[in-house]
Length: 292
Image (cartoon, rainbow, N blue to C red; front, side):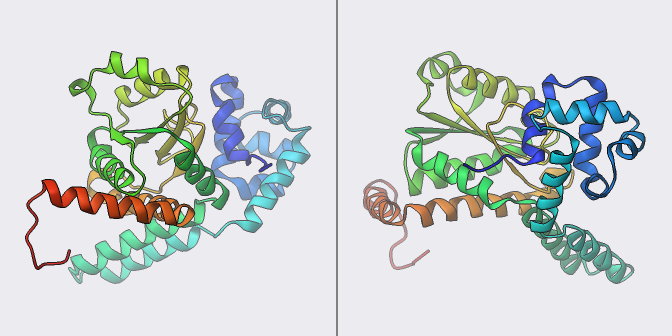
């Protein structure tokens, strides 16, 4: 059994925490190195709470005490790719590009920096769990609006190509009442939620979860509105405004997810692609003689 990380426990228990515990939890997420090195009294002072709050938070997150929480953070830091490298490379690129008006190089350096930061925060077991959920689901529904709509559309289309039974939720265009009556434990909802977060994504995902669906959230923060709702989270370092700066990192994460599905179920995917190609040629007027 894979043990839950501190981040996962905070995400799942966050709605149940007191206001002081939430403040302490946010500090733990933002400053894990400090928590790994300092006693509960110091962490309480730095987080604007107290030693008692830190200890009670540890219990609320189902740890035996602060020492166990601290040891879990230390272990995770040892395994983690330092995200400071990504930020450093972005700052370096900004300095180097200043005054040079090299828009192409600067933007590509920026994209690479956020992809590296996303990689540094991506836990392999979380990705494997998401791939397993996709393989096991009988039906997959992808949800995303505003800046999340384009990557949601691509993900639904590509999942439908490689494994089938994947659909995009189109909001008012779909009959949401009928759709919710069909959702049960065999369904998987993949919800993309980035700033500005839309209420419709959260409301629909909550309703689907109440009917037994499993939820994968793809978002920029464990404590974003979709965080406490989701069973699993894939975090993307997508800078705001997402539509202008964050798409490269988001699509990189989605590409990793699709690659994981292909790798985990290669033989079935190959058969699915063969069938998809045959039916596509019957319907779509492709230009002959050009391989794309």
